[in-house]
Image 1 (cartoon, one colour):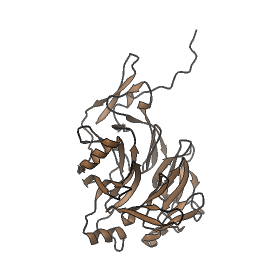
Image 2: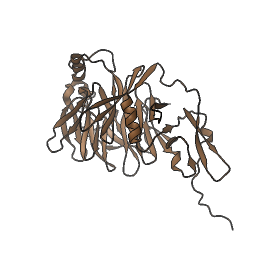
Image 3: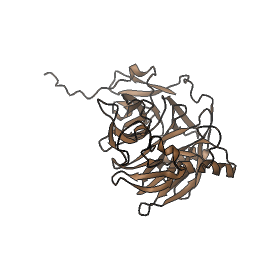
Image 4: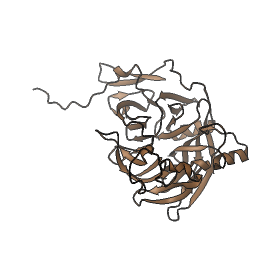
Length: 376
C-alpha cells in the first residue's frame, strides 16, 4: 500500500491518502500466518510494530485492522538493522548508512484519514560498512549506534564516517576486527547505560574462538560486566525499572538482577531472538532460523530444539512478562529467515514509511514556518 500527499488550495492543509498500487515484490516467496490473539492484542493496545528482516532487507510495518486482519506495509532497504523512534523521528541503520525519517503528520497542516504516522525520509548519513547493529537516540535527539566491526558505540559526524563515544576498556585501539562482537545498547533517559557483547576479548574475531557462554552485559559508566555467562546476548533494555536481555543463543528472554548479576530466564522462545521492544505487559521481538542450514554442535539453542524435536522458526513473538506465556504472533515461511530489530509505535492504529524511490516523493513537500518579515 503506497500513499501520496495531495495539497489543496484551501486552508485545510494537505491530506495523506491511500493509493492502491501494485506493490513491488512484497513478501516475495514468503507465506505469512497471523495468530488471532496477536491481532486482538494490537487492536486492544493500539500500537503499530516495525519489524526489520536482516536476511531480505525488508522493513515490515504491521498494523491491526478493525476487520480483525493484519495490514502489512513493506519497505525495501539494503539490509535492515537497528531501528529507533524518538518523538516524531525515526532512524534506520542499513549496510552502509543510517537513514533519518520524520513523521509528516506531526505538521499541523498535514492530515490523513488512514494513518496516524507517516514517516518520510529526510537525510542519509553514509557510514561505510561498520556492521552497524542496534541504535537509539540520546537526550539531544541524536542517533547513537553500535559499530560492531570497530567494537564501539558511535554517533554521527558531519565530516567522518562515525564518531566513537564509548568502547569497552579492553578495546584500546579502534580497528575493524570485530573482536568482542559488541551488538546491543540500552539507553536510560537519553544516556547510554548498558551494552551487550559475545565475549570480552581484544583479539581479532576473538569471540569466535571462545565458549558460546562467554556473552556479557556491561555497564558503560562502570566499565564492568553486570552479567556474564550468557550465550550470544542481544538487546539489553530497561523497562519499568528492570533490566531485560535476550539470551539469544539459548533461545531465551530473561531479567538481570543488578544487585547480584544473576540472570533469570522468563521464557524459552524456540528461536534466536533479537530486537527487544515492549508494550504493556509484553516483550516483543523477532526470532530467527539458523543463518546456515543444519545445527551447530553443542550450541545451546540448537541442542535444545533438537532434544524437543522443535522445528526452527522465523517469527515475531510476544512474551507476557508476568506469566512467561509466548504468543507466536506472526510466522514467516519461505524466503524470510532472519530478523534483527523491532520498534513499537504507541498510539498508532495505522502507520506507513515512505521508501526513497517511490514516485510520490516530488509531491511530498513541507515548508518551515515563514518567519520572514511581511512588507507593510
